[in-house]
Image (cartoon, rainbow over all chains, first blue to last red; front, side):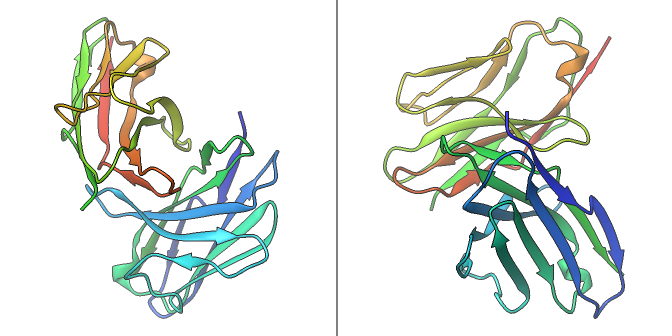
Length: 114
Length: 112
């Protein structure tokens, strides 16, 4: 199957700093990628849909200026958490759509904001 | 609204025991239903799926049947192995959309 990789797998940062998380499709091109976040003991919640070469589509309640998504190539989407605060601490997961329509997921990135 | 409810874990079993992880859903229209599995240190992987009522998805000895009358999609395996230890997510996708709605995940721990 296809492989999707996220980096970093975990990151700790100070409040007020920005953090970038990368999502790469390693062996296929993905025009569409998705970003999710998961709080402890809660469901994965879709944050936004990332389309290569165009602006991301954000879900209701997700601040687009807070969570910047860039899908500049067919194999890379990035999520930047700007001016991070402790409440942004979460597990962030990306997925990429394969040509069959099936979704392949990254390993996830755990963000801790101190 | 649309949602998925899973039993809380962890589920702890001995090797060769029978496994059931309950999943029920609420959805408008006719969703497709999925089970994803996440092994330690890896991304979510599609385990099985069913796209219409009474369909049975199966893979690696796991099975789940799409029950419209009870809005359920329970995951079962007759004899679990230590290597099945992972987190299992039930999910649905609404017709003509590409938005997966997940349950909270259930951690399965299998001991020898």
